[in-house]
Image (cartoon, rainbow, N blue to C red):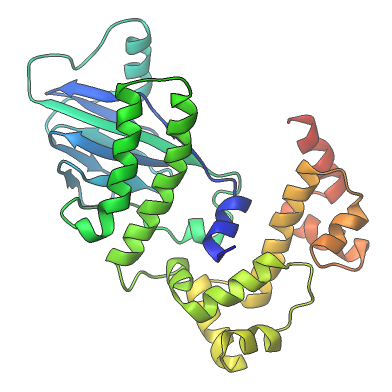
Length: 305
């Protein structure tokens, strides 16, 4: 499995699509900050998406915007339009009062969010920009994203048996297509995204992620990457934000958390599965990273699932 797929599998990337947005101008909604990545796809009309501290994005038909780190933001047909909170909008909608249904210019959008169990722990999530805008005019980076969003919109428009399950499954694909399109569009994307594009560093990531139980050394990893020891360490730290062994330790602990929650192995067995021959050493490192012993973490998280 490639490095990004392994990461998304471990951080439990899950997409949810909202009901179709069908507004008439003027309209505007304020969205609070949370732990989810939010996305918007404009089907018809024009609108603004604004994240505080960032340049407002003027969306055109077919554009997609991702707010990866859960920042508060607002969407509206124009900068001067009155905006209400998303909670107020949902409360009014659920009571049968359909706001923004006048005779002004129409806007049709689909939106949703992506939840991550490990947010914002992994460098991949930490390294994403505050906002990503994929312009529909850039057809070479947007074609698969566009087709996936079209499928979602069609299912929302013509609900059939299994539509909701299919829609949310397609939402998972939307996130990956947005990241792919961003990487293709931004040849010099920084941080962890650059690590994914660098074949040498990405291959080392894949090695550690696929087999965390192995006693990896810098020499082994740098040789696999086809780099000198010093060049590998410098490049890895620059792109990933952690040294190779720091990344390996953090990945092992994330993997251990997943096993503890989902499985029934003894602590000693979990330790071996993630590369620790000593249960005591594993427990010491786990507590340093998670602020709980593995046994307490397992007990508390088993209880809530």
